[in-house]
Amino acid sequence: MAPRDFREELRREDPLRREQGMPPAVRARLWSRLRDAREPKPAWHQRPAFWGLAASAVALALVVFWMRAPSARSLGGLELARASADLKVQEDAAGVEIQEGEAALLDVARGITLQNQGPLVVRREPAGVRLVRGRAEFSVDHRQPGAPPAVVLVSGGALEVMGTRFTVEERGAGGAVTLHEGAIAFRRRSGSVVPVRVGQTLEWPVAEPAEPALREPAPPEPERPQPLATPSTKAASSRVPSTPVRAPSAEDVLRELEVLRGRHEFEQAARYLEESMRKQPVATRERLSFELGSLLTYQLKDAQRACAHWARHEQQFRRGHYAEAVQRARGTLSCEGRERESGR
Image 1 (cartoon, rainbow, N blue to C red):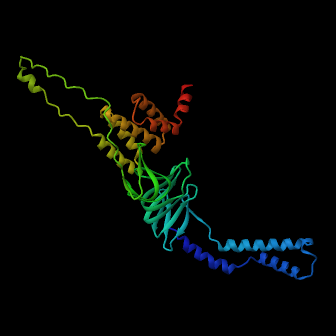
Image 2 (cartoon, one colour):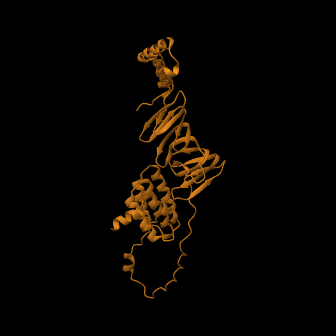
Image 3 (cartoon, rainbow, N blue to C red):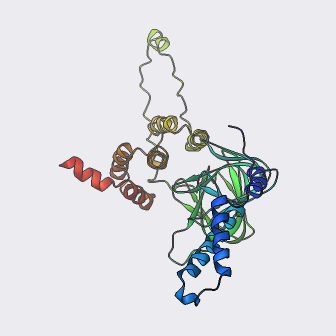
């Protein structure tokens, strides 16, 4: 679809409205009222014609205002508040793409305004405004105490905003945010939160803190005495020493997971996590299990699979590190209600 130049469309409409002028019916009615007004009449409060003339004047003013006032433009649910003369923008399935020029887009309901700094792609979602690609400066109306924060979604998680000004750069699989004023917090996909201070720049993906081991490693077994009898040469030669295949570490799995998420290959990421969990020790299996549940809940939005997974997760990790985040996810999916219905 070709990009639309809204400023050029408005400039083309102005001469047309000036040429058309006042509609003939309105002009005839107005002159009729003016001729009647020149004739001697009783007091105005005794003549209903005065009110008719006043109504005609108000209608004329509304027509002129409508002809002169430019209509607000909406792009993907975002209002176009300001635009440069060279603005080129298009809408598609990915969102609103600004190709050239500058524009200020406004999410009226959430009080979020963004100004592009070069080409970008932005999309309005139910959870917030997502910066898909590019660089933009955001300003958010201040929230009252106790009110939920505004949310700006990025590839590595979400920025929770209580009213502030900041610049976000999104590169697809990573990015950065610089806080100019106010206060924001970066929420990882795992649910943990990293506060950002004024003047600070935070980049993502953000490394998770090292998780404590769930149990002490077992002491090594004492060496068994070698048998006195020497095995036959034939039997020894038939044994082929096997080389164990090293399973990928948890860091390797999380890096690959972030790449798949950046490509929006969520189903493939879920299968990759399910396979990787079987090869991990208990100390790291909980983290991967939590990532799988978050993927099913927030990216795939598969309530049936997610609720079943969270039930298994809670049985296996009764005192886990992510208990609070798991309960929030179950509440989002209404898992308890689904379990009651399935138990009937």
